[in-house]
Image (tube, rainbow, N blue to C red; front, side, top):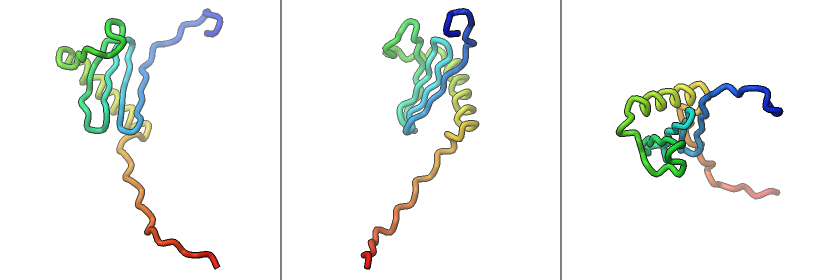
Length: 96
């Protein structure tokens, strides 16, 4: 691969960070900002700055990518989202 003799198999890329999520399949990228954000679809070959959301015109592709992201998130323990940790009581004890 490093010398240019191999072929890298195409694969999807998935990520999630603090509720933001995305999947990239080839030049198509489906992204969501925040846990309750709307999924948006972009064709990076024609729109690399992600300005033109295609999710309303390519509904089937957007739904398929969203489904693939959810499958990955479940298999990777991203979903279900963990519950917040309970805070300590806040009482401090003095050392003797």
